[in-house]
Length: 260
Image 1 (cartoon, helix red, strand yellow):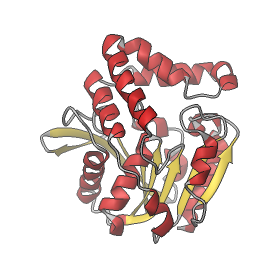
Image 2 (cartoon, helix red, strand yellow; image 1 turned 90 degrees about the vertical axis):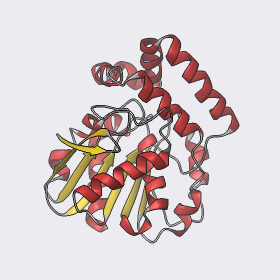
Image 3 (cartoon, helix red, strand yellow; image 1 turned 135 degrees about the horizontal axis):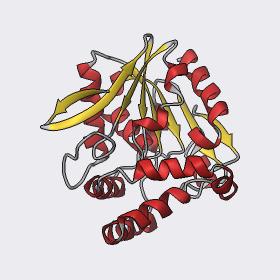
């Protein structure tokens, strides 16, 4: 684990291996440990960077709202520190929103993009209301909010089948500070629509979706890639492809890294 001081804020990250730079960005209520099962394999032929995003894991909060642009600027600061000029960004859920913000702000730094259980589209009016409800709920009962949120990320069958993994994700999520949770909800609520990137990016893009994702409706997410060169991989499970479909996802990502 390495530390960068950025805008008087402690940023925690790791840097392993040599080769094409691959930056792994976790999602909301997660931290960089979500990638632990993948880093040993990925770092055999790539330089793998994992980062605790603002207000998550060992990284401190920067403010009351962590916009996707704030997060992207922080990621860029880590890459600058490591003297990495171009990288493949892999973002899970909120990590995908941040990767898209990074792609818009720093297009010359992009070598490839993987949106893992994520979307290029902004929140609908209904989802924005749900974010506001979530902010109220998490302030009222933090533990209950976290436990319910994590359970919903897995497909129904897998909640029992992968009970130990689900419990582990919940325990990691409970380490997220309240301010980090609220700042991320506020930031996701105001994020821009970046579907245009899928149409005009000059680097390869891979979208990975779960057909039983309870967070991002599968059919809605197919619409955003119609008429684009984006490559799609669909899995039969929920929002947590890195756990629910771990081995297949690892193969898909290694293939993508090899081809960029």
